Every structure is written in structure tokens, then in C-alpha cells.
Image (cartoon, rainbow, N blue to C red; front, side, top):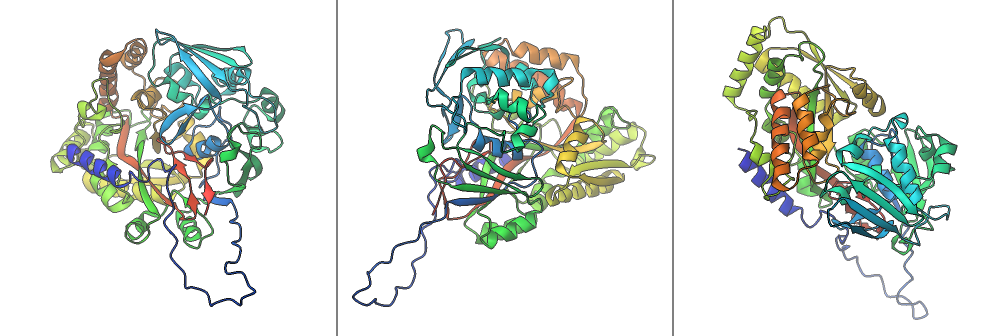
Length: 546
């Protein structure tokens, strides 16, 4: 079944190949109009064409909890940061290219990277970007006092040290060679920040929402921000690629309701959306050529809080996971070409031999059929709840969103039908929900993860003890030892260690993977030069309105 699903995803990826990356996308040709009546001789044959207003209106969705590069841990904030800040490298047209660093060298042992900051790298207030800005921000993120949700990624990447040798030279040393490290320098947690602005505006991230202190080094900078409503971005006049930036303004709306956003798009008031009602997807796929389904490296899943009863019992967790029909969810609920998930790691990741990581691991027995339901029922009975008798009512918590609600209702019905257990559903606004999960104030919560880089570690590293995103509060000593050992291993030996770690994680059933993401988007024909990176992050630095 999985090979069939993988084949389906590959076919889907081929279908959307013309759109993935999209830096070179050309808008559909405008339809011809009726010729005008012949003009009098004294009138020019062709009237001058009015200039196109270079403003992009884009629906961000939820109001971001933060747009501070060092504190952000969400996709919505990442979209904004990717357009206002820039790291040592940037992904353009699917390839890593020099950005703030005009060049770099790597030592023969792969442990030391030396980056040279370009001379024309400047902040939006005209001050030069220096290696010390990177040293400051990386150190700030790693400092426990800052309480960054992403501080763990510095350890996961095996960073031993980083320091500015002078204004233009930044040196990074690794514990062991990491083939994905360079890609991380294009990720927002590794972007620079100005110490004077952070200290003036608030280390808690408040500085990034205040246009007076939100000095940035990317193609745009923050002009206005209204909580829960919208923000506006304008060009950074000092950006080293300023000649590529055609937009005069980006208006980012914070419309949570997908139906409202779709109405705005179809009426021409919004030019880009990346969420639409699931029920509308079949119509859009059939009728609207601006609707596209892009591939995405990510997993949608539920986490079980292993510290509360009865979810502390692996038999209960496994029963819950075995008894849902993932294929039915993607076919009848999400409808966006998603692939049922059989593990936490999607099929985008290859090992050193070139084999698909999650094909080698297998499906851990969660492919749905009648025998799996029977196994789930037997497990629940073994745990003391035959036919669901005496099983307490569970609560599934999700952030306010029609799509999340529909999935939760489907899971609720499957658990009732297959296990005879009752589940209540609770939703919270996005910012509140993020804190609820971090505080482990839930029984079952929805979650989703988009890979930060192309390696299984971007998923496995989340479930170490104390990790911010370890929502299940799972603690397995052997798992931690394996991930630590992987940092100093290389080649296939490293992946063999990761396979063992993944087996421990999946067979603990602390998470319930539901599907592997795709990225349904709608982009108006009037928008040219847009790009959705391989991490599914918007980049508007080369957009031009047609």
C-alpha cells in the first residue's frame, strides 16, 4: 500500500513540477480583448499603458506569535522572516546561494566553516551587517535566558562554537561533519539581529513587531503592524539585491477563516493564499488554473501526553493509532493530494545509499484494515477497557481552523465506531495553543512539522527529553544515546543509527502520524516571479505584479 501511495505522490510531484520553486513561473497569458474603435488621426494609435501598482496582498493566516528570527517556531512567522531577514545563505530556485556571505570555505575534515560577509550587506537603516551581528544573535538564541523555542537546533546540528574573527569573517566549528549544516544557515534561527535594536525593543521579541526597532537585512522591512489584523512590508533600500525587488509594498492579512480568505482571493482583493476550505478543493482543482498543489516535506500528526492516564499505557496509544483510517481522511476530508502517514518521517529523505528512509523503516503496522481494528480492540481490552467500557472521555485539542476541526471530527467518529470511546474536541487561538502545548496542558493535541532541512534528524531531534517540541514528554535513554552517537558517525553508519532511533520512537506510539503534507496554494496570474522554497516558505524578493 505504501509503495502505491509513494507512487501517487511522485506522480503528483511531476504534475506540479512546473510550479515547485516557481522563481521562474510565468503568469498565464492575458486573454485578447476586443479591438478598440479606430481613433481620430490626431489621437495616438496606442494610448500609454498605466503603470501596474506593485503591491502584493497576501493572506498570512493567523497572527504570528513572533517574527523575531531567533524566537520563531512557526511556519506563519517564518514566511514573514524569510522576506525581512537573510542568513549567510539563501535558497533561490531550489538551490543554496551565497547571501549575507559572499563566499565560504570548509576545512578538509568538514568541521570548520569560514564565511566572508559581503561588503555591501546592510541593514534597513543603512548600517553594515557584520560577522558580530551573527555572533550576537546565535549566542542570544543559544542562551537559556532568551527561551528560544529553537535553541535545541544548535545542539542538534552539532555546533561546537561560532565567533566573529573580524567585521567580515565568521567562523563556525562543528563537533562532527554535518552534510545539512550549510542548509541550516538559510533557516531563520540562524539569521542575524542587531543587538542595539533587540535591547531597545525587548529581548522577548517585541522589538520585531515595532517598526521603530524592527531593523532587518532582507529584501523588505516592517512598515506597520496591527495585531490580529495586518502588517505591511516595504523594500529595504539598502538590500544588496535591491535591483531585484520590484514590489513597493506587501500587505499581509491575518484572516484565519479559510472561506473568507478564498472569497477575498476570488474577488481579486487578495493575490496569494495557501489555505482554502477542504470542501472547495475538488472544485478549485477542476475549475481554477491558479490553484496548485505543491510538494511539501512535512507531517501532520497528533501527540499523546504520556504523563496522563490512560495515555501513559502504550497499549492504549497503539490502539488509538491503529484504529483510524488515514486513507479515508485524505480522500474525504483533506482532499489536497496528501499521502497517509505511516511514520513521523516523510518520504523526502534519503539515506547515504540513496534509499528512501521511511521505506526502509516500514510502516510499523499502522496501515488500516479490518485486522488492525481487531488488533486495536484487543489492545484496548488488554489495557482494561473491553469494548471501550470504563474508558474515560478524552479531549483532543487543536488550534482554531476549519481544516483541523474537520480532521478532529473524523478521528472522533472513527474512535467511537471502532473502539466505542468518547472524545471531546476543544480549540484555541493559535498563539494560546502554542503555549498550551509547550506547557503540556492537554491530553491529545494536533501538531504538524515541516522539515527544517533535508535529513531525518529534523524530525527525530524533536523528541529528546526537554526538547520544546517533545509534546508527548517521552523520555527514552537509549533513544538519546543513539542520537548523540549519530552526531559523530558518518555515511551509512550514521543512518543505521538513525534507523534504530526511529524504530524506538515509532514503536512507542507517542505520536499518531496522520498524513504527509502537500502544499495547496492559489497565486493570481498577476503575480510573477514568486517562489515557494523547498521548505514551503514564501519568498517575494523577486515578485513583480503584471
